Picture 1 (cartoon, helix red, strand yellow):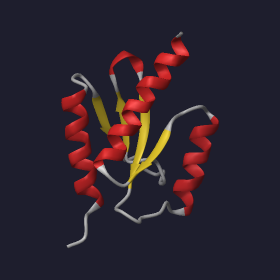
Picture 2 (spheres, helix red, strand yellow):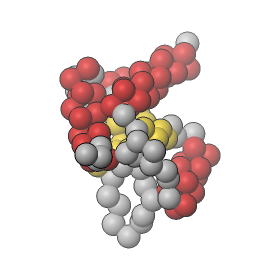
Picture 3 (cartoon, one colour):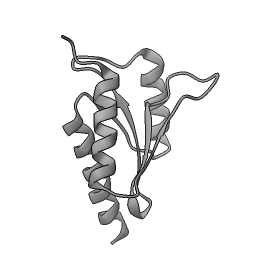
Picture 4 (cartoon, helix red, strand yellow):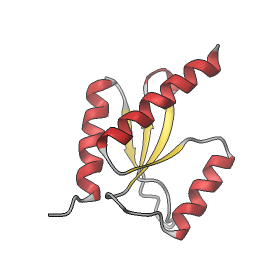
Length: 103
């Protein structure tokens, strides 16, 4: 049975909220604009990142690549995660990078 993107996304979001209490996670479904990452993760201390979830082996569509590039040009962290562990690593990395930038 194939692993579904929505299952990875749901499990990752639940785990993120348990590890970092108070985290707010928004599902991005911008009406009239496609290609946005799946989730905006607002971690404690003002740390934010965007995650596009993909099933294992999944790839970004052309518009998703464009949107990711445009957001990164604006200094937003955009991660593509195929597993719960990758999503947790993305959050931890964003927290660590923010901590370094504040020093």
